Image 1 (tube, rainbow, N blue to C red):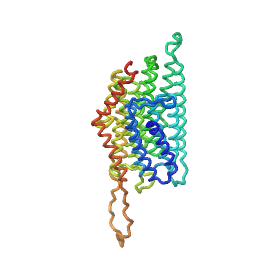
Image 2 (cartoon, rainbow, N blue to C red):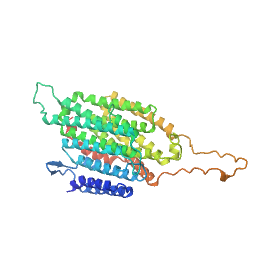
Image 3 (cartoon, one colour):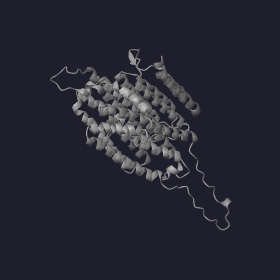
Image 4 (spheres, rainbow, N blue to C red):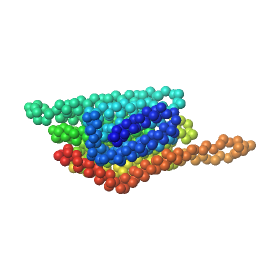
Length: 483
């Protein structure tokens, strides 16, 4: 019963909030209550206790429970931030429906149904990309529509490749035809391309940069944190259910690591290149995705622990990043199109949140991404110093790009200082226009930003509880023990 409530309760609440979507305050309060209720339900579900329902096995493992709580917390943060940040009229229903689908994916063990749910979640979030706030008479921009269509097409392609690979694994019998070439390499190639599309690994990354450029920051954060991380969990499940694909393709696994290394170095070069603020932060997210993917395909306990821990840290850092970005983009009375270079002085909380989140994505101590990066570096060192140098080079390039962005947009001198001019002959103070007063940062969103910032710092200082859970879960993975 608890499993069904965890799956269907957010779906029913999504339908209710869709009907009441014009009352934004009530809808956000209902969504926040739904997420808190989901957390209470998840606590009561026993771990590693499988249940059969209509021929489908549902089980909640310790690792999936951690991801489930992180996803629900991300949803709660998004709904709190939506009180003051721009979002579409259907953002809350779409977010609740997506949370229901993600909860189902984390409970399932059937790869075929999981594939369909991943595709369905991709179709669902497209509605949020092209959404507009209530009462807006303008049409959706052509670039936003183009970004949504690109995301839709690529996710459908990823789903088709994944489904074909699972069909082949279902009919594949290892050692049945000794005189023929094993199809394990082809199946593994299909799965690699499919998940590389979903995880935005270079050169399959353009959908993410367009999404960050043209979608609302909350929508981009929700898609990247939930769907990308869920895809990583599903890929681990695939390796666990079909370890024979790895055993018969050990000699070509270095190609997967090479692709991850190229992704890290290429995104580091992209961060250095001059770009807009949104495009730069998108490249930093891509860099971290490449690091996480390398830790996964390193296929070692240390690398897998770094990848899982990095994926969890990425969800928090990306949410902090896009909440801060949305605060920095709030109008402050200047003419449209004017580029500000003192964002940290003008919006101190949002500016600090942007810097901290970017540094967390780079793995700078003592933030939450530091330990995951160290574990991934250790896994790379086990495969040779060349791979370690490639990762370090990508990190250094991304760090230089972050320094450039901070110098150009965050750390400039204050632009609000106005020089008092002497009064003209016959002029009084009343004849002059009133001094423009800049609105402060919204209190609730500023508090949320500080909470996320402290959470990133706290996990970085004391990561042992989460890391212990990850290590215990990795010990139960058969493909890691054999490899």
